Length: 301
Image (cartoon, rainbow, N blue to C red; front, side, top):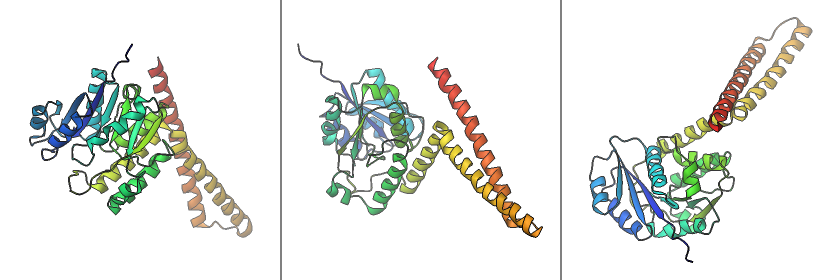
């Protein structure tokens, strides 16, 4: 009895990519069973070109962001019953011929999520512009603290997901922060992750994302996610630390008053400020923890 052939779907978020979308779709179709393009409010011929080449197109009437496009694409992949979902960019920087490489660990049952990393091959890493390389590594270090400690490229959008991963992950972030959010949620659901080496082309300025805005979006999204998911760690630890610091300055203030009969104004002000900050952070931590616990309990019922 022959096993069922896996249904592989490629999902391509696109915004004003009429110059590159055709080549990406044609090359991708060689390796998958279906191509879905989310046209995120483009004002050019992106959607028309995609439809003409046989891709299914999801149309956003206005530009909603990378994360919103992934959300729509993931929803369609679930609806179609995809066994493997591959995401790649529409700007030509991701080589579609690497799709089989990303898909294989999933087909072999070795991973739920596969990330195409630019940092597993020294030659590929050398081709990344310096400012991008440093920015990606910084963002990856931030993501490591809350997701997979061994990941090397948290910002690669070239990924593959199995059916389980797509059923569990639903991006909420509208912008580029969705890349990190997906990793955080994958870790939260105990999904296994693997990386494979890929080469990203930087020989043309095809990216529509400002690197600084992209990086800031990702960092802020990560901070927001951590503050909501782990409030005791995110707010509680700094709050407790602030109270310890305040205790030191209160002791200094009292000791000085006993010895001289005078209060050192600056030391006292630091003690008061640290106490207020510590109590505010601990209160926030407890309130958010209770709120998140109630929400999770409600979702489980």
